[in-house]
Amino acid sequence: MNNIPHNDVAIQTIQAWLSDIIIGHNFCPFAKREFERESIAYTVSRAVTLKNATDQLLTELHTLEQNSQIETSLLIFSTGFSDFDDYLDLVAMSQALIEGGGYAGQFQLASFHPDYCFEGEAPDDLSNYTNRAPLPILHVLRESSLDRVMRTYPDPENIPLRNIDKARQLGQMYWQQTLHRLNRPESKD
Image (cartoon, rainbow, N blue to C red):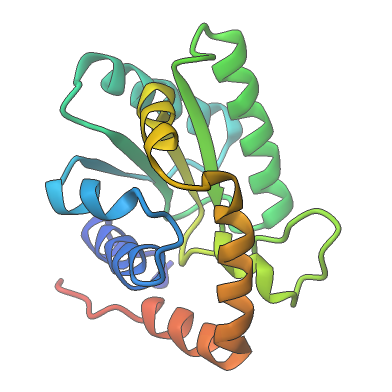
């Protein structure tokens, strides 16, 4: 159990990933503003069951509904869902919860995982790194914010293709070294 990060370490790891990867390579051109405004909620979950994880997701959704100062939320799984197939089950159940729970049109999910693999791609394809993170994450986004940003950002439909091209340009060694570094944060215990 020593390899399970404490909440602060998990959050610092994800913040470094956001800064270095997501913002640093402009994978999400909208992230920098919210990161600098500190309007991202970081919640560390130790859930290992789908029931507990989706209960926590419901709490996140409720928090976002009640607090307009929080633009987006990252639900970080420090203990559970390290197996990608288990994580995909969580994503599917979470999507169903959003659709069946009256949150469709209000929130949507983005998913990140250390072993993320797009359907139809080989596990070692560099495109997968656009959605790889040091820990499993459910990213809850406000649809109204996405709609607003998508109307003002030029050519938003090509963001995924541009990200894949960038991931491939950076190469395997870059990704291995960077994620290794991000997974070895300085502990502040």
